Image 1 (cartoon, rainbow, N blue to C red):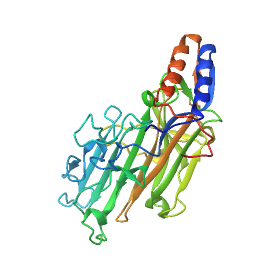
Image 2 (spheres, one colour):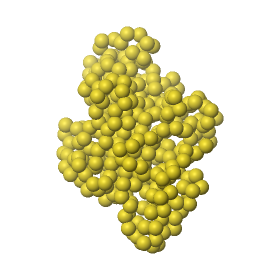
Image 3 (spheres, rainbow, N blue to C red):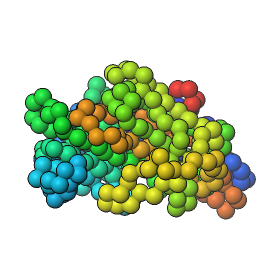
Image 4 (cartoon, rainbow, N blue to C red):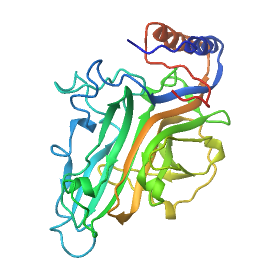
Length: 340
């Protein structure tokens, strides 16, 4: 049964009325990956939960000819990746895409893009032990990758010289924005917010990894100076940032594998987002290490300001409201201090 949003009707009616008159709708949820029901009812996450249907034992691209650690030996290194793409979704497959697919791409903000790249030095093994979306205790969660050299060597003790680095970027694009954000212009102002509930990130907790916010304005991506934090290894942490209260630097990811953000060479400055076309986050470890990492998040949410320029767009806003009434994808913008 579709999850109800009892206060969403009021917000969407306001959007419809402003569509008739022209105007702005502030603090509107445009992306919200969260909560329940991202797998077919009763499946409990069974079937193919891997990104793009490619698991650690089948389908992940790997280059065995690289010298990751610079020791002149290519016999003990590997580069494995989910190619960065803004065309091919990164999320798991649906039943319509695969007989094993169970992911519900009709859910709000279910479709996302991006890529994941991991570089393994002094080890050859199955990569990405958990590049999946799980359905645990009825709460779906994104698990980016378990960059765990322990797991990769079959639960053996990690070799002291295993060296692993990685980059991962997750992006939700405008054609999937909620509450009319897919058709109206979206900008950020002092009422806007990017937020996340993060269950695990071992690298953040240890201090040897980074997570940042990613926004595309028009055709250009930007990376935040603001970084997410993890105060406990296993506890739930809430991170948020007002986009106008942090600095931003240009970010230029290129497929299939050039997605590393050179933060030390970046030039951060204030930026006014006037045409938001994608939102997301970035996760990396630049320092080679044999320490395990495991990122889990329960909720990713973005609020922006919608601009509806003229009465000619009224039918778009009204269509959004009708779609909500009929059980569409839109979700209601709640208080920024509350997370589903």
